[in-house]
Image (tube, rainbow, N blue to C red; front, side, top):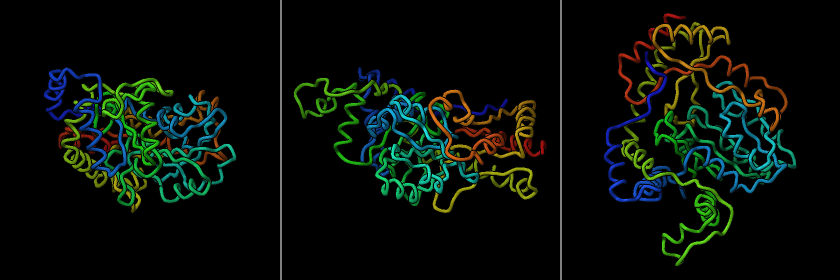
Length: 375
């Protein structure tokens, strides 16, 4: 069976984990945590990057930095993982779900402004499959209505929009380094702070359980204390060591994933031409990171049969999100703005093919030929 995903492993992870253990520093903010954060700041031209325990905790920090209150509204797509909404629901916010564009599965930027009310405080965009939302339009809307922009860039490490790294365009960006992502630390993430030094200091306090310990470690104060609200969002140094091994060869990982993605894209063009499937669309101003390759079948029935057929032939394919607005929690904590024209319809058609670091040419060929034989 060809698995849907294999967590990335490049070969130097154990060496760096052993080094962290030998340094007697495994609780976080040691050598490898700093290496990872500094690498992202330089690579993405980010003002400040803080490693976190997960993409979820990065989103929770973003919600705290947005200073949302109970009753505030947050606009986002329904086609996303529950963490995108959870971060704001925990602060008492109402989620306003907006329909997606069928071409990219990203939030439809043309619908956002109409969904704004006097209670709206944040626009939270999701860069699905590592493909950028239409950020110029979204940022312009936010500025005109005095709203914060949070980028859920969990799938978008190494992707760009008009030359800018995703996660660095809004007020705050959130990455994930879960085992299913292009670069992994098992469970982990990062938040980018793209605003001002005051927000950076506040983020450090939130991440360090509400203390000013970061200033203490920099020698700016002689002792640290509890100064504000916060939580334990600092990841283990062992996780950071695992991640650092992959960031060292990030371009190589990116190139291999793009190579597989391009093989899929070229191989399935004839099925697109015969209108049997649809494949991803990449807007002109976007550079993606090959986080996933999906196809869209004619409808839910065809998708169900396709997944079963692929599994019978030793290829594990999966569908993706169940739209949040149709879930019990989504109905409790949110509402859908106007009509669900594309979100449910398109999500019912979408199926993801295996794509992971270390795939062999033989595996890629087998997946392509098996998929073609179904259609």
